[in-house]
Length: 121
Image 1: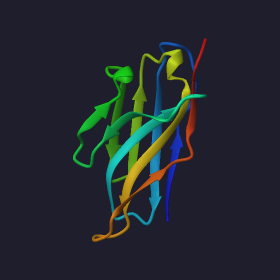
Image 2 (image 1 turned 60 degrees about the horizontal axis):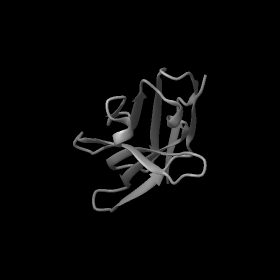
Image 3 (image 1 turned 45 degrees about the vertical axis):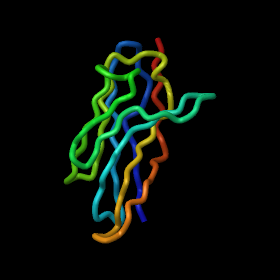
Image 4 (image 1 turned 135 degrees about the vertical axis):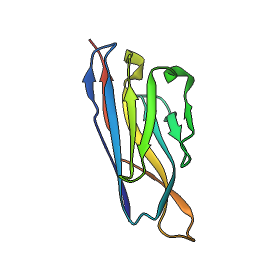
């Protein structure tokens, strides 16, 4: 069984910064893609940032230049540094990871429970 646990959300003023963390635990042999998604009220869940097992990154246009995704493979963690936050960044942020439980086993994708980010003055 695999668990993803996010932390670091909260209330921040416009222009401020937050750093989200996501820790993976359980039956993990290998992790490939790790990503952050978000869902605002009344909207669909959307990709914010993705980092591959090789370290390549991809960002939503709305966060390019403001957010940075990174990972620590030894700790099985992924991070999202969010700077210059805007009210429209307000959402529940979810961690997602492709995880294999064994050398010849497929990758299954798991979700964390989400962490609330609110940008407001």
